[in-house]
Image (cartoon, rainbow, N blue to C red; front, side, top):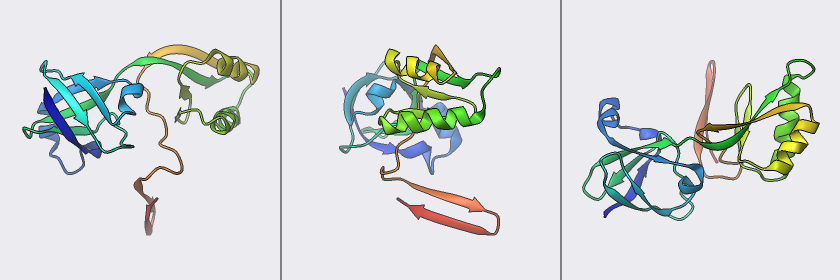
Length: 167
């Protein structure tokens, strides 16, 4: 088994050609939330992933194995609920309202400008349908928000001003 203990978030600093040539591993959200797990890459190698506690692996990240090889992470398609606006009598505010209610329940949620995604839950699906939203079961990748209290760095570009925030 090939040990993996390093993660390069979103392949930062790696040449795109290196990332394209790297082996890959497809992982669902449940697995990517774990800091220790086993997987098989596209070359058929058994991987033992040992990341720091609390580490979350995202689609687009690159894992580095003990032999120096790179493994590109792909967010695997999985069963999710895709929530969209009812075009007949809804508005974009309906998605905002749904995100608010799901957030109050601490539900992992993927936010897009035209839809939301959550893991399957028939009770939540019924609640969202009562809010006149369209809820479809689909098989797609799932990349929920990391949350307001997660440790991440990002920047906001606003014309002349560029602010870096570390949270």
